[in-house]
Image (tube, rainbow, N blue to C red):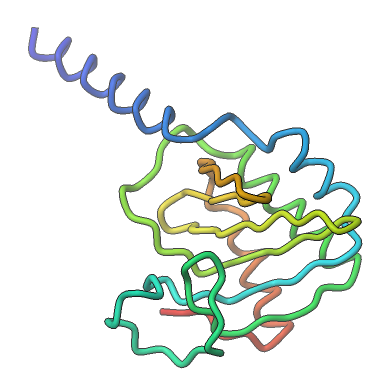
Length: 162
């Protein structure tokens, strides 16, 4: 009986965590922007929310969906496509689990014909917030693609927050 309760509890917890995400992947309108992008920007974020004074990092004074911007870089077409592919791969690689925290260090803004999709990514907590217009969604992600984003930080001399 104890094993059954543990199994049932684990199943309910997994269902709850997976249920926090709005869907299994990017929505059609988000995908259209990602596929037709004509501009992109990579952002290094301070994982401490803007209203929290506990942060000790130096920022640009800007914020990106409530997180301080440590630095930003414009992306050429090849790098933009590579990072969009990494973000899609992270969504595809999720295993239906996430942490309770959200400490994003990576941001990606993608623009296509005036429409914008912003990604606020927390590889530590296995979650990504997707913003398009007034809509905000949470997706579960895998960690493998963090390396691609970190390498892009290095190429652009962006500092990743501790």
